[in-house]
Length: 468
Image (cartoon, rainbow, N blue to C red; front, side, top):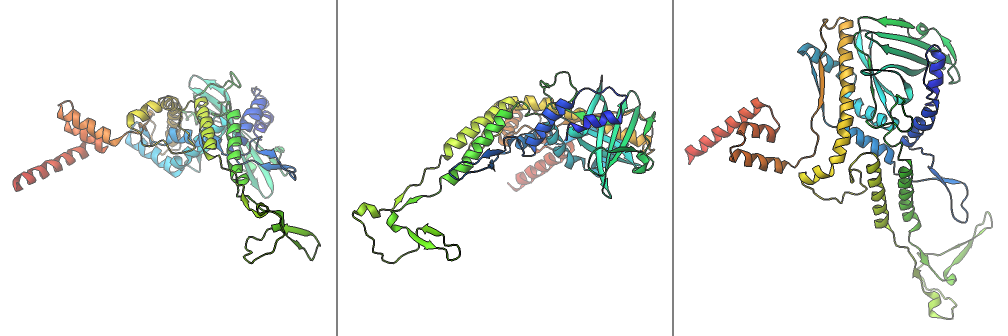
């Protein structure tokens, strides 16, 4: 449970004055986690009908996860360019990120961070190698805040060995150097249990340690770029859909109605009672009535009027268009509530082909929101890269040096390629841009590659002139 980490941290570190986060973790983070996993409180509805008893599971659109995945894609779909101070540090950071599956795990990390209101990247050394841990908001409590952001936090990790459940709580603080406190608990029934020595499960790991040689913070906290109006003044971030629960519920109700439309709108045929046969179950003696749709022989039926034998199609018309329009209207409301442009989330792809200018005008609000989030993401990645270099210096893989890291995201805006080509042709013909710069932008290549391409074009032109 999300709220358990607060009570567990109090028991592990009784000398720390922890903020009263239990209600927030239980009422907001845990509730958002349930919705993200597809288990919202409105997920079951009472059965209807003559024999309807109990509850049935509602058909769900799952917009919470779709929204978070979309936000994560908008944040991290373009490659984050990490520039280190020198070539040796660059290779070391790139190799550490590759070994820890950084590029594969970050989209999932961001999706959960948007769902739960935050997450932490933790950098540490294990057997002389740099490791990364991707911690979600349910397993991390931000405790202290400094000029550089969150500088103190409590991490929780769980393990199970030989039927015993272990819970490790680690308090990490940075004030010019890194200090760590650890507490390990063991239980056989899944509760926190009794405190035991940390070395009993993790040999060589100290309960208290200070690392004077670590001059960089070894964790970075990401929170969505939105004010937390549900817990003002608190350090944890806010889920991107925490204020949209009514809209998410309305979307599931609309989608459930859409799904039920195909069940309730199945083909229905009204037949005269004289065409209904009965059959007796030899085992139970129960009498069942049915209409034989495969019967092709002549039958003698007693009736007074011809209309008594008329078979009528009474199938209801499916309201597909109304449901799709209703769901799209609710999706636009969800986009409005989460800082996205209308149409960013859509139930259909009937928008057609749009020009770059139309896309730019439509995505203005989305770009503004995601630029703020990408700035937060760049800061997190930069802190993680600096921590990796600091750990490399600590274990002797890198020589002691000044650590310089810069992170930037390339522009991910969708652009019409034909418009880029036409614009460059006009600028070159007007003498307002060099052919080299135009080739670099159109082909998205380096200056050296553009020079080689221009040389090829010149040789081909000379060859065609000689042949002519």
